[in-house]
Length: 507
Image (tube, helix red, strand yellow):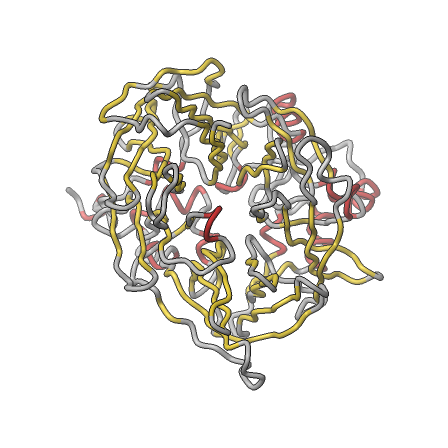
């Protein structure tokens, strides 16, 4: 092999991120089962993620721009079926009607529209819900008995959990004046949903916490209310937030030094630049952790820690007078650059690429009874790359916990396509891998009447580096991390890698 052809990360096949689905799977495909799916495991695993980088002859430039593709794995009687459908967002409809990219995305600039004048662009600034992309390709969450697809813009979409049809388009600016929100709301044991976003309060930008009160059947958005807020550290540079934490008494906001420049956003809206051009990283500034009271809605305390970037909080909780936040932390925000399509295609010759993805699970622990504590040091929970972390959410969210599950983010690891289990008490790491196999976010499903935190099953959608028209459902024993079963489906077109999902057990 010539030196120029040598791969820096020979065990990592980046092409699984670059696949585009050309044909939906509307009717359920029956899987070929190896092993044994537990008889008690019955329900639906919904997934969301990038579905197609192509529109006509054009191609998106960033992974976050890819057209949202919904996946459904239905599990019953030891069998499984698979479907996938594109989310029918307004952006999807406009792009495919024009057969070109006509809506500017996170990292892709749309083709110029001669029908849009400068006055159109000025007016669009005051109507972000209709002027920015509604391509909700990050996650799915339940609101009562309804399921919604999320991204960080103010539009969410209701989907049919059986057919994957796109049913309704909800503009949260109309309901609770949210300019944006995180892609990961918190669903509480009683069904209430909380999320954090930005809103204009008394003429100023504020980070706000919104509560959507539980309604088993009906509109959970009708009674939405702001239950907490805080001023950004920099009024014209509010922090970028993908997730937040919640504990018994606090909403936990990690205010990192990756910010949204409001002035740049206005300018970029006028000049048709992608959203990523509005993000600004301040490497010289520390990260702040802000606690907002769940009782009063007011900021209670602000702590400082080292400069870091994060996308996902693993968990946060209070224990014996301390507040703990675990998160997947990076030294900077280069991981966003690593998800440009060009960066993925050239990763095998980029010696810095592995460092861009070098995240580690870190713990921040604050003594709530020490009024003099203002700065805290992060502790590494385990020396392993991790992303898309999940816990036994229904039992452990906002409570003391021991285990979390994630996928490896170390592209230079011996087995980059692996699922990991981290014991936060001991630091021990257990992993599952199979050559040429690339899992997605692991979802924990407890066994009936389980007594222990890891007594259950891990579900993960899997892809294969050597065959792009094959997708699978992996079933692991969460305690032993041994494979119990897998279902393999042959798809009519390439199967792209998904991001986040939710398991709906049969009622």
